[in-house]
Image (cartoon, rainbow, N blue to C red; front, side, top):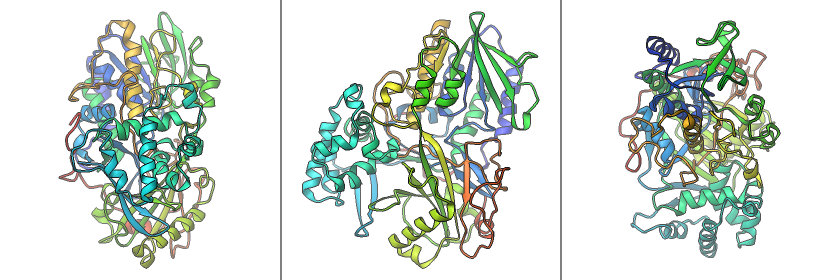
Length: 586
């Protein structure tokens, strides 16, 4: 990992030492199962509130689906995650972790858009004139040249009508966003060039298959409620450094007990508390998880279960409110990323949205991946983020390479003049739950009806789509629920200006412009262990490469071409001048 960032193994050792040196058995003991953003937030809030905390994560790292893995000398993020200024809970977590300076937050919303049919540019940009919400939206729409003027005016009216919908209404949630758009004068052009630009990325579904209630939430909170609510932010370092490494260090410093590679097999009520059956996996296989008895059982006063719906369904104890089959009915939606390393610059700026093209969003990861430090001078690493990826998820890496490289060449002269040095694909079949009409009725609340046992995750009923903000809010709410009957006063995350203000309940937060996504497995040079079955990486045949593999072998290995080795390098330290600018909690 980069200089100045604590490695996961080191942080885990520090965490164990801190707990061994000063565990107070008299304090209420909360066990958090799952180390993604929801689990991190739950554990940090609990330890900041004085509880004794154990965090169990089955994978060899924290971060869940918002992390990174090594591919040669490059750091590859499991998805292109961005946030908004109105993400108060997520930004509060960054402040608690002390890493908000490793992100950039736009001074005002500014999304450059390439029109794929005409190859012209436009922008969806918040006006610099100080107008109250929602009037601030009018100049942005009027200046959006992807649509004729008459359609821009109709879109503005539709936005205001959308913002007035009650997303908690079953009638609203059970209707598709696409059907509502059609009934409000939004034709195919407006749907593709405007509405799906905003909602495919946040809902991981095309308009025709997306919940109207969740679409209304995205538009209202991200665009209408506050003039600056939709300003975009993103990480300037690998996500593993921003999330997992920082959380390991923070939990260690606070005295929490963190165990990686610890798989929970069952959770049962026992003696007024809970008993978890835990086994060690990965490199710790066969070893007892510290804190468990001879039979591998760990006792807890309270539990936060922060794992994906299928795993949660398997671990729900008897008497829990959500029915396991209802959690499985949530389903899932896939995402892929197509990664391209070009010998020269192809796009300017940190990201670009594309309409009327198979390509959706393009992100420049040259610096954060480490390519800028050691790659060929002028080389650029681009990640094409493709949500609602059903059309592509089962296609081979070489098919995807041909499709997207040809499309890049059509869109950009620089991509026509120089073919990419390397192309590889990361795909996640279960990136988000399926945010379809009627999904609200399937999303359980934090409470299970069992004392001291709560649920967390983007799939719980936070009122938000499957976003980083939703994950953090769910974790904070679950800790409050779990500790409520134990006499623990829960305030906010220590060290975050304003704590987790507004993190409980249905108050508005932010949309993340893109849902989570990741890679499942890694090549032989990757540090991503093959024991993590949720990650898949495919290496497409690079130009002039004679040997490459599309799918991992049973050990999770891929052939790495010479082109890969030529352009990899260490991750640079945080870049100066990229700190967040203004707003809560900075």
